[in-house]
Length: 240
Image (tube, rainbow, N blue to C red; front, side, top):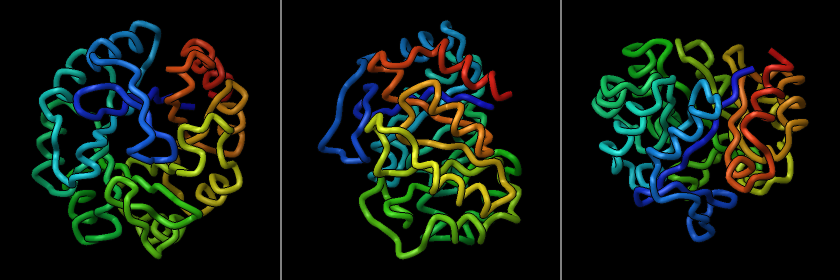
C-alpha cells in the first residue's frame, strides 16, 4: 500500500490544521524544502502536498515554493489546493508535480473536471473531503449538499488516477481513521482510494490497508513524533 507523508503549506510554512479549521493551526516548520528532504532522506517514496492558501482563495499562491519542493524531492509528489483551471493544472504538471488533486471543481464545475481528466489522463486525482458524509469545498469552508459517495460514483468512469478521501472530523485529531466511511467510499468506486484523516499509529495504517485502500496519507502523527516514518512505511509494506 502506498504511504503518502503530508506537507500542508500556509504562508510559506509547514502547518497542520485541526479538522480543517484555519483558526486551529500548528506550525511544524518554517522551511518546507527542508521538510521535503527530511522525509525523503528518511525513506519516503512519494509526498502529498497541499497549498492551504490556494484551497481557501481558489488560486495558486505558493507555486514557486512548491516548484522548489518538488525539485528537492526527486520522488513523485501529488498536489492539491487551488487547482481550478486547466492552466493551473498544466503549470504544476509541467513544473514536475506528478499529479494534481481537484476537489471543489468536482462540485462547482463537473464539466471542467471532465476536461481535466481527459487532458491529463492518469494525472488527476479527485479529492473528496467529507463533513458528516457531505463534501466540503473551498478549503473546507463551505459544505455541499452532495455526499462524497455520490460524487465518487458520478465520476468513476473518468480516467482519474485515484480518489483521496478525507474525513474532516478525524483530520488532525490522531483519533484513528473513520473506517466505516472509508469502507463505504471504497465500495462506491472502482478507482483506487487513498485514505486521509485520523491516522495515528502503525495499526491504523494496517487497518486502512485491510479494508482495501490503495494508499494512506499521514500528517500530524509524523510531526508530533507519535509515529515514525520508518514505522509507517513498514506498516504499509506489511500490506503490500
